[in-house]
Image (cartoon, rainbow over all chains, first blue to last red; front, side, top):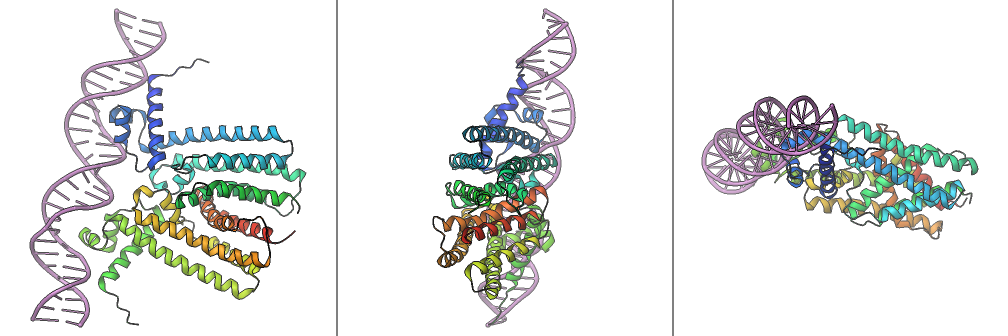
Length: 206
Length: 206
DNA sequence: GCAAAACTGTACTAAAGGTACAAAAATGGA
DNA sequence: TCCATTTTTGTACCTTTAGTACAGTTTTGC
């Protein structure tokens, strides 16, 4: 476990931290390299030593973001599964936790990087497209696995579990757009709870 | 009914058409003014005679887009209401028509301008923020009115109709992101049909 | 024919994202 | 402490893009 953090890694992390703050506040396109290097106290040459170009910076940001998201989901799942052994109940608890978490997001949250990429893909390179796709598929897999667990105990014929799994991401992404556009952060958790209600109705006969 | 179309209006329309094509293909940020004027066969001075700046172009695009959207919804509603007098049934028909329409969208569709703005707001001015908000509220009003009509005949207690109305937009916006990211256009209409199924379950007891 | 509308031409600015490359400084292990 | 590698600076230059300023020219339509 030798924590060998070289000076280069430190600098890279500092740039990524600053970039993340700036991008959260005003978006990727509006965050200039000049501004980042001024804040980081390095020169332009220094920046391009660490990152090939702006896209490369985005890629590294994206990777960190995905890793953190994985941790969050693992944590939500662990906390929910502690409270109930029933697959339906624990998933409903998990979705409640997820809604609570979304309610606590700061007002200025820029939304999901997946969507951000989706609407600004010209700015990024192909690596990020692949990362993005992987991120969406990991959401699908996560929810599909849980829904399959529920369906074993509470059969729901004629229901496309994969589509319902995708609806979780759909609801978050759409909910972010809704709440950001109207400037009402409470709309996002509210929409998430509708997804939860839909899942409950699907698997709870009457 | 004197259709007085001045030459200026013609030129403006030509620029808007070209801009729309380009933006549909590669996004707003990646569409340069130089490229538009070359295609339109005018000079830069000509462009800035018609539009104050790039944001002003976006504003006019947005307005046209909203007008067309209103027409589409009015048409869907008219066609659906022709087929059934029952508020629930006609709305379910309308949602099926909407899903069919989304299925016919071209693969390269850039997604909704509302979301596009949402994730690139730094690029636009405040006028567009207001237009965008108005557009979202008009979706809400449209669906809320129909849901209230349904609830009169099929009472559904403890259901927040406004939230369900918002879920229509949420599903479209989220569905666009899902299908664009995975490059599978069939996912969008599929998600829309889940919304339809949810509405059906809410108002159809068992 | 004449005024207003619809452009053109020229010249210039500033910001942003680079590229190229040599030189200097810091780091860390043998 | 030497030495190689890593990290960073400095200088100079290029391209694209979104403008601005404003005078002059052409076109349109009553």
